[in-house]
Image 1 (cartoon, rainbow, N blue to C red):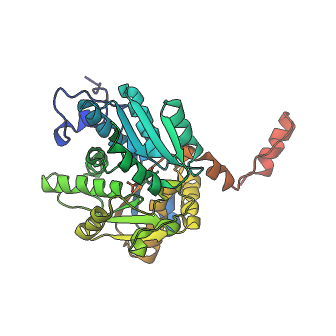
Image 2 (cartoon, protein in one colour):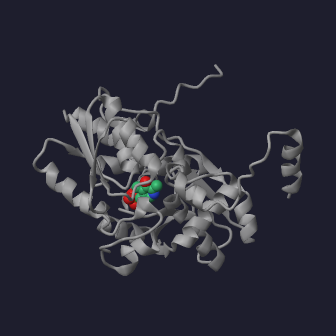
Image 3 (cartoon, rainbow, N blue to C red):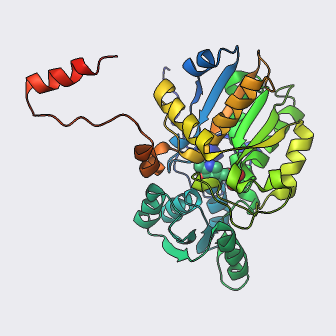
Length: 359
Ligand SMILES: *Cc1c(COP(=O)(O)O)cnc(C)c1O
């Protein structure tokens, strides 16, 4: 039979490794199973013999890795009888929460920072029917409010402090190991609350502990320079960065993240907004892959560490691209240098525009 069974999402695929029962009603949109793309041109430009792969999590149903966690969190919330979920969000969590809640037929409440959310993400929360509560404060303030209100209202928190989120997100590491037939040498991620780096490490450890693979990567987390509490050694009260998805000064998984660094013998570092945007653009121009600014932080950091030799030649490196570039079209357009040519609708003018712009 040349056909394979229909892919029905990561809970079905990894059922044995996730906290569900045979009769659990699964809330899924077919998340996971995202492409692991080997970069062809960027390693050559760097002049380094390295294998760089990007795990394109922007191709999840709502355009970010948050779907991996949300399918688990909402499945468990529904299983436990919850009628509403709530989250604080820089955008992608609210998009995922809104979509999975509507799939499940429950309500969603999302707290977003006033004015600092990418347009695509806001559109998603709205079209899926979330109750959008814009607070006059940043993500960290929203997170505290969510924790406080959940003590007094019948709502389930679906931020990454919900342990089921990390269970879902660990499956990205499973997929990478299965495709590479080993763990990479380095796994680079952008870090905000540090839930995702923690979840990936859980996945790699699980496969190693169960003898599916006999190595694990060094985990490398990059923060945006204006929002880099791990580099400052303490929370940052007024985080700032163009990479709004990681504009977080009080990471919720602080201790877990440091444990990951220690156990995996990895490190944290920071990237400037200029480095982040340059990496986003390089990836789009040289490899045809469009990710949002926060996502490019993993590649920006990896490029710097490959150039310096901290990530040595001969290494296999995976960079997680956490979200899709279309989430934040304003940034993409504003940093694009390619002009739009407006001409008469005639063969002559179009031909001229082509010939004048041939490389
Ligand atoms: C949520 C998010 C992050 C940060 O992930 P954490 O688990 O909070 O560290 C990074 N990039 C994008 C696009 C995100 O949506």
